[in-house]
Every structure is written in structure tokens, then in C-alpha cells.
Length: 483
Image (cartoon, rainbow, N blue to C red):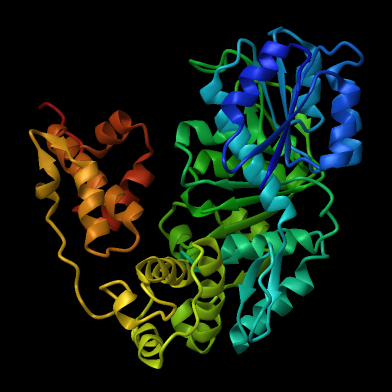
């Protein structure tokens, strides 16, 4: 269970924060002074810290410096009642994870703490190579496989990890690109420095540049204070940019400049900031096709792919399937308090017959589903999802999820879960996207410029979404000039 340390000299603030941040999955320890907080860092080795700036015995900035000297990867969230406190900004420059203003927005703080704890997990929980047939269950996240293609992946990680060069990890969705990125980081010379992971496809495009590079106060609507971006926070460390093929051309240009001379400006600022980060990027796109289509910069591709590492899809290393099944059965059996004594040959044959379009991630989900379904200690074929057993789950048309003009998301999730459907998150998003895009394009007569503006996304992203959903992506014609 991760441990969160809260340091604040106000008992009522400590009580409030502890009450709202403690949970069944997070242990909270508290301190009313900097010195006690520092001792607790040594004693408990917390996974994250919430630290007040003004403390009775030492400034929060000095305490931050001591804590980071003890553990240079410790994510620290600075809180302050003084919006203009330069020490908080200085702490961010030195590597604090976030700073928040009092009175604390508890929703914002919970989100920041969750992100900090996840960052800590990524930095500390090792991604190790499990090349044994019966790898021992440990806290490590394991990269499992004995196949020749996975042996090559292990060799590539071993070669490139100690070399301080950028790495591009290529592979289909669900092949384990983040695990490989973490293994590279944990075997690198920067392993004592921060590791930050950013999913470029999960952050709305207007916010991605600010997330990466930070922004100045007043840079855009809602920018009520300066924000330090991930590249500034990760100085001397490593950044993992997942789904980099989904970046806009403008953000790509700014990353290219950073790679060329190690400098950038915050959004809305003119101060040049130097940073030294190693970039590990990943994508499931064919970047050569994306470059040819004009959606990715060729010069950025060559900067990122100093060393390109290819992850094979599961269907091309099916000899690893029994090892993966055994690994996930042990892992999820322990999590769900169920003992998996055996997996009959018929169940393994069904798993081997399936094509696994979602790769290892889909296999992981399928085994977890099967363990939930178990009524004995044997993982029977009937426990597997319908799609793997060759039973096509009934799928309602998108229109069936509409009720009085509203999208019945809860009903959609219930139906898909009851029918044994896998990858529910993507399915729900696809249904919602299809309804939204079709309706909006009808309203603007197919004008993609108008549609992308109303959606708040770029035309490139809109085109990609239309193509992925199998919708017609007609390019609108410019209006004829009046004669």
C-alpha cells in the first residue's frame, strides 16, 4: 500500500487533508513540523509528500531540499496560502511535482496526489525480465517471454539503456510499450532522477503543450498562475511520451527545438529555459505512413529514433502464451483471493486459437475476467470471455443506446459487461465519438474546419477519428467565388 506524508503546522488542515486522502489503498502519515516530516521521510520512505511552505521550524523550501536529498525521486506537492510566494515557484523549478493554493480544492488535491503516487510507482516498481518458466510473484511488473523475438527485445533494452540516447518504442496497442520504457529507465544512468510518463493522446490538444512546457500567468483563459511543465520538472531525468504520433505539428516543432538545443519557452512566455531530459517515445502508428501523410515531422522522427525498438504483437510470439497465462493467473489469483490450481488443455487451446488484436493487454483482461468467473480452483473454458470461446456477444446498434436524445452510457456499459465484451472503455468511446461526429458534421454540412473548431481538436485529429471509426472523411470544397 502506498504511503502519503502530509506536513502542515495547522492541526485542522492536517485533520481535513488526512480525512479526505486516507483510503483503503493509501496510508497517510502526518507531521506538524519540517523536522518531524524529514524524519518520517527517512523512517517510512513515503511514496509522495504534501508539504506546506510556511512551517514553524524551517521553510518548506529548505525541507523540500532535504527531503529530495534523501530521495531524489520523491514527488512533493507544495501547498501555500500565499499566491505570490516565490519559494513555491522556486521549489517547482527544483523539481516539486505540483503546487496548490490554500484554501485547498480537495478534488484538485486528490487528483494531484493520485498522479504523484502513480509517478512514484512507475519510478520505483521495477519492470523486470521474467525469462523463467515459473517466475516468482513479486511486486515487480514483469516482461514475460522466452520467444526469440522477446529475447531480442531484452538484448535491445540491455544495449540502449545505459546509453544516454533517445529511444523510440514501436508496437501495436497492448504490447507493453510502457513496461519497456520503464525497464530502459531503470537500467539507465538516470535511474536516481525523475521518470515522468505522458500519454499524448489522453490530454486534450489545447492543454498538451502547457502540460509539457508549462505556461505563464495570463497565457490563456484560466491560466491564473505560472505552471511548471513536465520537461522542466524532469530535468536530469527521463520522460516517456506515449502515443507521440497523436501530437499536433505545433507541439512537434517545439519538441524538435528542445531536442536540438535543450531549450524551450513556457506557453505565453519569452524566457528561454534549459533542460536536460532523455526522451523515450512510443507509438502504435506507422510513422513512415504518418510522415507521408504530412501529419508527423520527418526531422523529429530521426531525432527520436536514434534507437528504435520494435515490440512484437502477441500473435507473432504465441509460444509465450502459456507463460503469460500462468503469470496472469498467479497475479490476478492473488489479487482476487482465488487459487488457480490448473488450466485445462482445452482452455489453453481456445486461448491459442484466438488472434489477440488487443495483444498482451487483452490477454491480461481475459484472464482476470476468467478468474472472476471461476467457481472452483480450475480455470475452465466456460470461464473465458465469449469472444475467445467463439461465441459472438450480442452487440446493440449505436441507436439502441439513445434514449430521449441522450446517450445511455450506463446502459451501454451494463450491456457490454453482461455480454462478456472486452475492451469496454474503447467501445464506449467509439460509440460516443461516432454519435457526436456524425451529428456535428451534419450540422456543419461536412465542413471539417468548422467541426474541428467546435470540437476543440485539430483537423488532423478529426480526420484520424473519422478514419478509425470508418466514417466518411470528405474534404470540404472551398465555396465558389461570386461572379
